Image 1: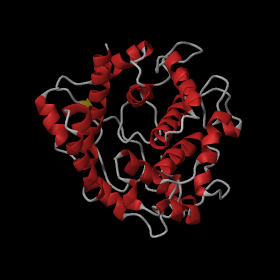
Image 2: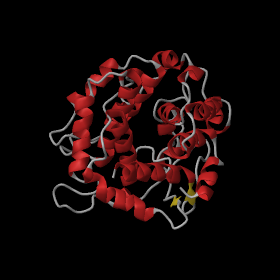
Image 3: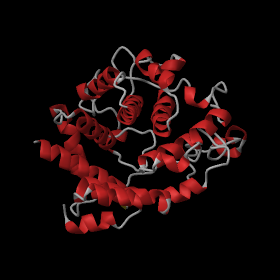
Amino acid sequence: MDPNVLDWLLDSDPALRWQVQRDLEGATPEAWKLTRARVATEGFGARLLSAQDTDGQWAGGAYFPAGFFDSPEANNPGQPWIATTWSLKDLREWGLDASKIAGTAEKLAANSRWDYDDLPYWGGEVDVCINSFTLANGAWLGADVTQLALWFPAHRLGDGGWNCEAEEGNSTRSSFHSTLNAIRGILAYEKITGDTNLQDARRGGEEYLLDRQLLYRATTGEPVGEFVTQFVYPNRYRYSALAALDHFRDAALLDGTAPDPRLAEAVDVVRAARRSDGKWVQAAPLTGRTWFDVDAQEGEPSRWLTMIGSRVLDWWDEGH
């Protein structure tokens, strides 16, 4: 890649820099692992670790901060992104060694309950996206999430994917957002634990998206929505062609398979979004309170999106 873009990406927080070293620079494992180890002591990782409560939670709640539903903030657009599930997801995806928060799994089992029906934390609840994040976070922290893992094949819909609205009886069709979150959570669980019992469910969800070329409605063949081409980091739960392609890259590297030809149009969408200077631009970030900013403002070049877009295109081009 352009040396100037690579230097710009390397001039970043350790949470991002180690991935640039591994996936784009071709650094040795010793080099990028040294950088990854700094996530616990520097920058984003250290700041988020410092916000953890003594009971193992963040902001006093599982998915929402403590007291959220009785506060004026509940009437604002979006939601806060500071509670336990979101904080764990960030730390895991930034590469934090789980040993740096040893004991957190046990503390959450004792102290954290879901807003829905006061259910115990590691058992999950009824929302597939929440359960996906919890499955991956639990595997990472060494919690017992074996029963939660069984939830995913049991709640797949007839078209092969998942939908957060299904448990409320509001939909019998899968959602792009929910399905991507499910297969990403399953893939993380599979990579961490080595358990392949969910592999068929994951691949079925992947087929749901591949049949639609990651972009289109099955019913009409029309684009599924503008969100597909609106790339944002952190994407939290939201689907985009870039987020989906990053999953398919990750899955192919684990499975030892070549890029599926049905990804071609989504790759074109991602390639077209790259500016002439080799960078991708941040779309409108998801509304809601955060601990601190981790990427560019809307309309500005994004290091995170540029790293993800670059490694996706490298993987695709090398495979063809």
